[in-house]
Amino acid sequence: MPDQTPTGIVFSPWPTDVESDDLWLGRLSFDVGTPLVIFAKDNISYSLPSTNPNHDHSLEADFVSTDKKAVIRFAFQGVIAFRMLDENGLLELWEASNSDPRSAKTTFRARGHKWSDESFLVFMAGGSEQRSSYFIATEAHCLEVVCDAEPSVTNIGPALVSHAEPKD
Image (cartoon, rainbow, N blue to C red):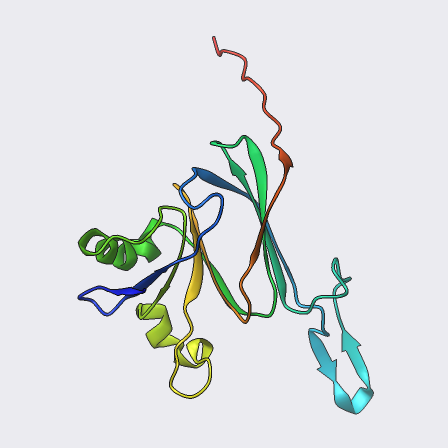
């Protein structure tokens, strides 16, 4: 059951195998899959080569879980909007979470925050229902994604671990 904070922010769980792991962002890739520019009068369009031709508006984010010593891939389909934040863009959420803690440290969902007010059409799910966005919070960054379907989370294998040489 979602919890609503006094600020109007509603947190809800997004259970994953890494919901409280220490994650570090390694790679972020967004594939539009459709032409970026279309000149109808000239019957010409311009696109980037697709890395995933079967998925329009797909986003993949690879993180390293230091707890699992593994690379974790989050795959989002039907992406409506996304943003990468540092701590400055998250003060509102962290403050709300202090008064009404979210369900997990790393992966969770939320709605009713400033971005959903500023971009209310992005968060409309039909009628008067408001979408929640998916969050992946780390020590340094936070990825927030609004999409049509629940993302997949896959452990794609061990992370490369190396030991730094001591500096003189």
